[in-house]
Length: 68
View 1 (cartoon, helix red, strand yellow):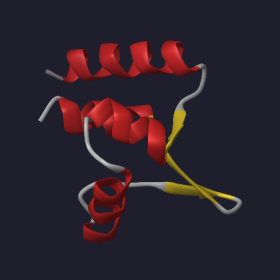
View 2: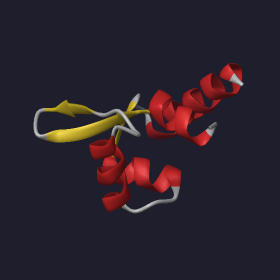
View 3: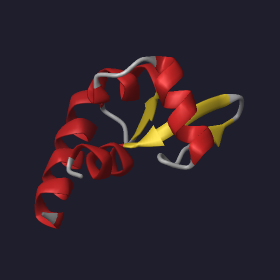
């Protein structure tokens, strides 16, 4: 299963050209709303990083959640 996560993360990185996705991009990949992403962040279900004032979510984190 770990190999599938890596492959999926690599596909996302290639698709978006970055290893860090915006909340909108993450919501699209998880088929949820931006508000759900915020709730997932606040509950600790998904890890995020702040880059300046923007919240970013790693493609590895998205892959981890998709492959659950």
